Length: 223
Image (cartoon, rainbow, N blue to C red; front, side, top):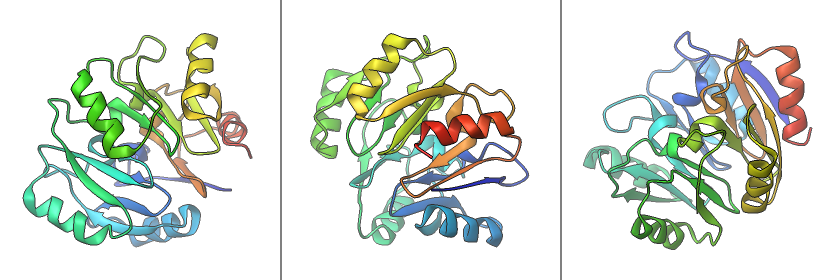
């Protein structure tokens, strides 16, 4: 599994700008061609330059897995039509919720999802129907309700906030059906998602991520 340090627009917070599954990576329009080449090489996906809700914060607004990508209701018709057209091998859906930052509020792989506790039961039902996942649970991580912001998961392993309790880790391992480890990113940042992009083929991390952090990341994702 490939792992490489990188940055975007001079920032180490690569996870807020980029969304990936095992088929596609969504990146802001106009990114450096070397970054696109790095994504294609390390993540093994097709790269699509796009925007969501008029911004380049694709990792903040989008969530999903290999079967479906969820977009907020603030997504414009033009953006939605473009992504539906480009993402031919993946369902693209607008999730009509007052919550819009799905990247921060939904942690998901192809086996399960942990979601923001304030989602309504109707919204949970919608998520189960649209994703086909039976294991979708509301909860928090280390007393933080924006669960997508403090974790990263693929179908091989997961990394979570350094203060995640053993009980929470056991629950997450049951939901996602992979082992989890705790760690940080970008020289001590506990908001894991901000500095990592991961799928089943590779990992991109912020350029300030230290050697010890990389070792923990490699361990978490089974390398």
